[in-house]
Length: 477
Ligand code: GLN
Image (cartoon, rainbow, N blue to C red; front, top):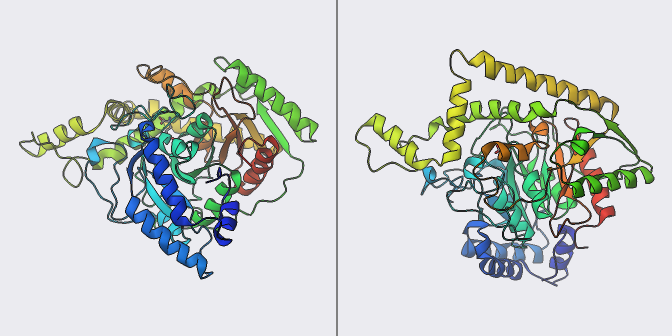
């Protein structure tokens, strides 16, 4: 099977008979077996995927195949798919099967995708390294001593290692973009409210968005064109029809880069050099690229962690061992059932966040933390909007460093939280942001270029990212 980079080429191969969906799924299953030690998948669905591949091959033969016919997709283990297990990589959902399908899986199935399995992630999507999974860490395929990023680490590695065409992730504070940057893939978080959250296990509902991890921006746009648009099951969605996600030639753009994201402390010198080169190249191509100061960077991570832990403490209250999932065998009455099921079912990071969230919402501290963080959220949003009144995009690295070593930050939650410093702004503000691979690797490791746009400028953002990816030509053509 030739190296995959975009669906359009694969589709032509399906149509002219150079390949079939069955052969493609077989090859992915074989590779997944060979790469099992990466721990990207929690479960594969081989019989079902092959059966579906047969059906799609028949549809292609008869000329009535859907827009994404035969695209093989991995699902992050927090996206519900009826009749399939979903656990959020947590013991608390041990043995739980989805009773219904998320809107995204239904829309994708209607256009002919093949789901191949569910991928490992940080427990309840809380983490930046995939080390918080109850099912063990995921290894970065570029360097197996290193993390793939998180929380959608399994999804990113499934794409990176060529175990599927594309994967879905969820992004609350960078969980699609940060692993994409660590694995040399493309990760996109759309404007909040673009893609339905129905059937996504909630972490922090006012931040969560589903999005794709792919090899090309072209595939990202294609997947979004199918997934986006109002859904009666998600009241927080943008009510206007979604854009068509047709990529256009972007023309000359005005781009701001944040001084603090290039000159700040702790940014790897190679990333700084890469960003400076990129800025010079963009200027040489006729784009207007200017430095802007955003002296609020230090407020982003605290604001994010106060608000997301507060929302998580409320969202995760439903896991108590009674309705579904894990129930402690040691419980003697209702209260001990709650306590023991949660104590035994949740891992340490999830417990830390529930406690933090409960604290910031508690009487006497609510105003000092939760209300203040809401004000900071508004302030950051206003200041970011101010920049985007004068510029089309904001440019920065996706993360301050390339992938770190497994274990390097595991015992230091604050150091781990700071890995999110450049990604949380898009979730705090609800703005769309994409990570595409930087043009040259650093010591064999990938890094990401991040672009952010004003809310609902997703198509402009993807069009520009597409032209940039084509010009840096980092994916196999
Ligand atoms: N790393 C961030 C966190 O731990 C982002 C998680 C996410 O986007 N789901 O919360």
